[in-house]
Image (cartoon, rainbow, N blue to C red; front, side, top):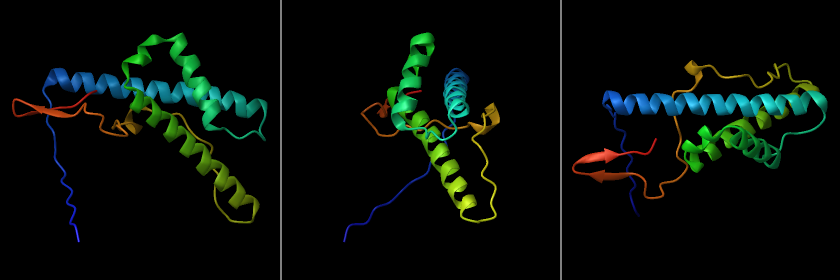
Length: 141
């Protein structure tokens, strides 16, 4: 039987890197809110339509065409934004179904996120961008 261990480390970046991380998280939050805004418009125009991954991908491409600054975010980070929003809508529609079946729960439509609500960036997989150089961990932002 093989044993797997997990380690958790606290990283203390220098001020330059911390600013880059903060800027990336801020951009992450703005992109999420823009995607949410577009999906809300679609949902308001047709309340019975469900928001699919394809729809969100189309909106993501439109937003990137309008504002090239979002290309600074790694593709895996943009995929995570899409996945977070998709999960939010899936949970919303699931709660709506539960409410229709008689459960006493609040459906809670997806909300815009403030800077306080985003404090992490998720890299879905390690594609070789994480590395140790000269005894320091190099993390993409």
